[in-house]
Image 1 (spheres, rainbow, N blue to C red):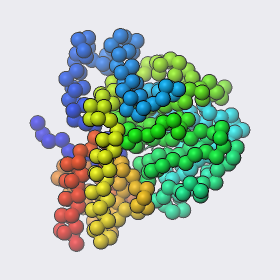
Image 2 (image 1 turned 60 degrees about the horizontal axis):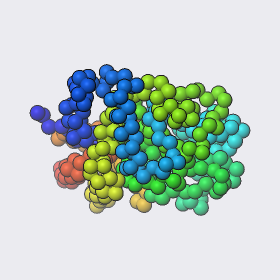
Image 3 (image 1 turned 90 degrees about the vertical axis):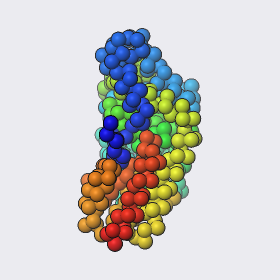
Image 4 (image 1 turned 30 degrees about the vertical axis):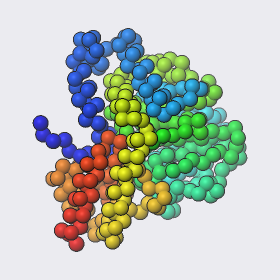
Amino acid sequence: TKDRVFNFAAGPATLPERVLAKAQSELLDFGGTSMSVMEMSHRSKAFDGIIKKAESDLRELLSVPSDYAVMFLQGGATTQFAAVPLNLVEPGDSADYITTGSWSDKAFKEAQKYCRARVAWSGKSEKYTKIPAFEAIEQDPHAKYLHICANETIHGVEYKDYPTPINKDAVLVADMSSNFCSKPVDVSRFGVIYAGAQKNIGPAGLTVVIVRKELLGKAQPVTPVMLDYKTQAEGGSMYNTPPCFTIYMCGLVFADLLEQGGLEGIERKNKEKARILYETIDVSGGYFRCPVEKSVRSLMNVPFTLENSELEKVFIEEAKKEGMVELKGHRSVGGMRASIYNAMPLAGVKKLVAFMKDFQARHP
Ligand code: PMP
């Protein structure tokens, strides 16, 4: 068969080949059912086994405490931008947002419709290249939650530690879409964690939501039933038809991550991939540049530019010819971006850095 490309897309993104092959082997006959997971009832015994195993494997991977609900929902992380305030606060309540890039800014704007959302810190004037020092965050002592985006997919800034809400009764909420399951996380520090699947854990169509159970049952009366965490948690994510095949695929990824030894090992691999890529940028004498402050550079999304921006198109085209695709930066920031999620092998990053060095030599 033709070699697969190294796909540096930000999401939907590359998946482990082992997982794709396993899905292929089970496609026409899942576990002796003589049908595909795509075709089976979500109320069937076979699917019940699939969703329960996906949940228990995810709980094991992230050491999710038993007082947290794990839900497999639809609507993408974008739907959670509304679901979070709808479930956690009343319209008159205050909620703090730290805006470190486009995604947390979108979350803030959506929340403004449902509560008194305020910006506790913004990185906009510094072009979203930083994560705030925690003392610099101007929290409202009455805010009911503090919302962060753990990893900004477009700007490439990532929290290495997490702030704590100053209101003791408030909770920390995190959008972990683009670094979910890339490293161990102390779930107990958060009230809500949510993540779209299509970067690190599977195909598009599924959003994982992990919620501390004491927060359930407080949704605003106008909350659409599909967005009500209590209904979804009590219904085992099956209030309506869930995205069955995507849940199955994510389950295969979770099992694969466990087989690899869990998230500590994955984090080590991710750090090594990121290290060689940032190092190549930093030793290029300004030929390649990454604008992000070094201490908060993302392990997942590496944005960079060329000193001579006219060469960026050539870079992207030549890389594509060599089997490295989707290196174009987000349309809002330009330049390049290499997304190096869990499923990007070290060999892919090694090939990219060799290409970068060669490119620099050929186009001085
Ligand atoms: N948050 C982050 C950090 C993201 O990267 C994305 C998608 N790129 C979203 C939210 C929106 O996710 P979705 O497309 O699943 O709604």
